[in-house]
Amino acid sequence: MRKIVAALMLAGLAMAVAPAAQAQQPIVIKFSHVTTPDTPKGKGAEKFKELAEKYTDGKVKVEVYPNSQLYKDKEEMEALQLGAVQMLAPSLAKFGPLGVRAFEVFDLPYIFPNREALRQVTEGEPGKVLLAKLEPKGIKGLAYWDNGFKIMSANSPIHVPKDFRGLKMRIQSSKVLEAQFHALGALPQVMAFSEVYQAMQTGVVDGSENTPSNMYTQKHYEVQKYGLVTRHGYLGYAVIVNKAFWDGLPADIRAKLEKAMAEATDYSNSIAQQENDDALAAMKASGRIALSDPTPEATAEFRKVLEPVYAEMSGRIGQDTIDMVLKATRGVGQ
Ligand code: LMR
Image (tube, rainbow, N blue to C red; front, side, top):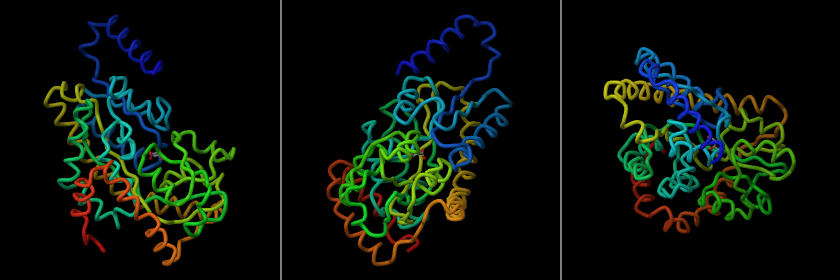
């Protein structure tokens, strides 16, 4: 918080000392995020920068701050609401702690059988309904960006649900993810993304779940001995802006930024699957982590053990939201 207030004071000072010069200054969009530049999100952010600056003829300057260099998970949401940064792309799991619990539907185990089913939600009416829930928080949702399906990692062999008993598993701050690991008999530990590598290295946690792209670019595979390609849950993002900032932009500029965002979204979503496939292959090739696929029997067991999470979390997420998502995805691509 202190960091955010200091940033705001500096920005205020700059405006106070240079009012005349300010008229020619470009509009600056600070885009903060927590992954490295070579991830679907990192590449999407760079693409948005390139297109936004091009379409506005430099009237808008986009400063991208990757890899938690400005703020960690929880801080970045506060920074956006306070206006210290203008744009973020937090994972969908990160909206629950903000009080918008319907987003936790994305964290339910096995909710999306594949990407095609996911798109029915993110590109359809359910996606719009969910983004609208952010507005009372001073946040405007612009787009959904893909990452991929999560896998498990640990420092002891993991093949079937019982292998997770007693393991300390890092999670994002989500009650659904907490319930998921409790169902497996594990001990979920909420931790900022940027702290996971060290926690794995020092044994503060035994393992985690994440996408192959995140595990690879954060080098988790260097400090985890085993991985299980469960694809048991989804991790993606909502690109969001400070609503007051966005609504205050000149209409022509906003339209150009919307075009840049639409194209950056198509780009980021078109590379996400490949990025994850490549990351999985690179981790396998590294020889540092033993990655295996669950047997069909193990997958059936994971599904069975995790099924009660739906009923348990129904009151929190809202059964209407769960039903909306299940209805949109029913039978798609199966
Ligand atoms: C995580 O905290 O594991 C992810 O949300 C990181 C990210 O933004 O992909």
